[in-house]
Amino acid sequence: MRVAIGLLRDAAGRVLISRRADDAHLPGLWEFPGGKCAAGEAPRSALDRELREELGVEVVEAAPILEIVHDYGDRCVHLTVFRVDVWRGEARPRERQPMRWAEPSGLGGLAFPEASRAIVNAARLPALYLISPDPVSAAGIDHAVERVERRLGRGDIRLLQVRAPALQRDSFLEYARRLLAAAARHGVETLVNAPRAWLDELPPTGWHLTERRLRSLSKRPPCSGWLGASVHDREGLQRAMALPVDFVVAGPVAHTQTHPDASPLGVAGFAALCDGASCPVFALGGLTAEDLPRLRAVGAQGIAGIRGLLD
Image (cartoon, rainbow, N blue to C red; front, side):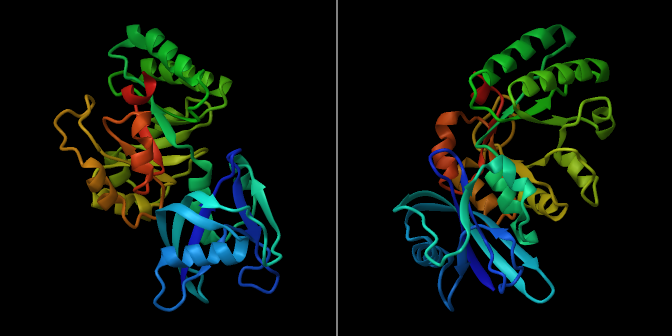
């Protein structure tokens, strides 16, 4: 069964959800608006039709962000999920379905169909993913923490990765503790990019996997927060989706100081790499917030970066 789904936000950043009817498959669960594709109907055409019939809105701009295949046993669904950036009209429940605008942070406490897990992640994740600078030694920790906290104070960063491969264990843990405390002061969620055992020495946080650590895992590890991963090719993306992780970072999209010898994907290459991804994908490498619209237009969750977002 092919289904087109729309992820809509209002001006306050809330997400539109509705409750499934009591006589429907998976009754009473919350879901995102959309519906079945007719025979031979393209998902984008189905999205336009379903949102017009279901909500009374006309889709103007939409980007495909997820392709999810899930087998419930009694039926298999293939969801094509669009982020609907621009629409006309006021969304109203034309089919009398219970409907509301929900805060993204509260979606995790609601009951959704299993196939919607990645859509919930996409709704909850922000568009900017800041990666901490790498102090070359313990002497640089103070300056790096000051830079990060100053950036968090601007209020538009909601997700932070603590990364510092040049630091030894004790120095890294000091750096991480200070950044996690700064993030907590600003209400920012965190992931730590380090060996799993090091996370046991820190407050609860998510874990960001390097591609090498991703390859070492055969199943999803326990994690008290987000589980993310870095990938650079289709094989890495397939491995991350199979684990599964909550999101991936893919790149480099452009030339970057962090990996100067890597060949950049470009926007078209990034779009091709992520085509059909079943989890949200951040674009990485030589990008700034000004690049966000063109990456979002090809399906990116957002952009990740160090210098491009920090400075």
